[in-house]
Length: 520
Image (cartoon, rainbow, N blue to C red; front, side):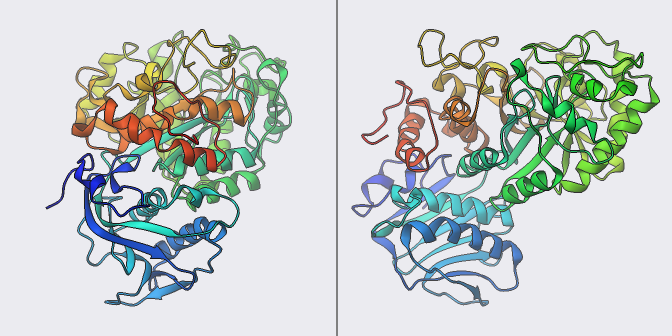
């Protein structure tokens, strides 16, 4: 009989020198530990992927990319014939998998093999990330290390609570170079975050090349908050980021903000302004009072059609985020007109509309997803959208915004915001998606997201220090069963990730709330 992952027996039955199956973040749905059994990866082992399956081969490429450097093993990828039970690591798509929920997987460890079974590509990647945490901490080293590479025997049957588990990265206020974005992708993927929401446009900067409107990158991309950290991604760089994320089980969601937060576009092209007069680039720390698209200007929609079309062609994922937040001075009729026109452009280019919560009253709830960041702004519209079949991603600023400071007093926090309050690691864990707005119950929630805004963040080290370990809390809420929610148990599993983050060279805040082990 399967026991829950928090069962203490799972740890007591393990083989000495192995990681307990119950130590994974986010917490698996069900775990059974096999006493006295372990698998040792050997130099002559191979990785077997279901024959003819690109999905399985993709997962095998990801896994071998993780393992070859630290182990020094060749780990060739071989085809798995139907019915075969080879020794080594097996990635099997379909067949005997007992977990049929999307993104679910079964991971079985015997003395002869580690077998990951899933019904879809995402499930195989999720199983690989679990296996990664069950291997010794040294698996995250960038150089060859001595074995053994031992995994505790047992079975994990696992699937996520929500299908959308996102991290939002604001690269608009301050540009983040593409290699650093890749590093962030690597860090979030290990905790089964499956969407990276890239906030590409804001008042202070335009971060994506648009070939039909080249001044957006040249002028809009030259600025940044405080006049610092400008830059943009060429279309080739953006496509490379999208492919890099996909190869790690992460789907990119690009955001083109509007109708507010658009000063960088207006500064690039005077014909987008209501009076045709040019604007200077904007570098202040707060929102620009002039950064508003002209809603009744036909050029606005010609411009957005071109932008959305080019980005949609570069983005294989299902969503394009169109913003819609902090436009409080706009009459509802104007917001309806703008958002409905832009939604049609998104749909024209084959994508599904994603917007901030202020857009909920204007978009068709059956064909869009909206993201909550602060209860109390338009609760009635959200509830009406829910009645019409709307789905919501929950990202409450007081708990899920990773740019909020951990506290106000310590000198190591000259960066970060506090307008939504400070947020400890426990704060980031201590909330429930289904309780954010009365009337938005469990059935309306598509998932959760952890945004990180960058106007007070200067580079990847500061960014990672704010994101980790709190992003693991959001990952846990998005994946684990609601009934398993327990801070005292979570912080122990979280603590075990300290050495892993250190080995992976991910900067994180060693919060005094967490019982970090020696070596964290």
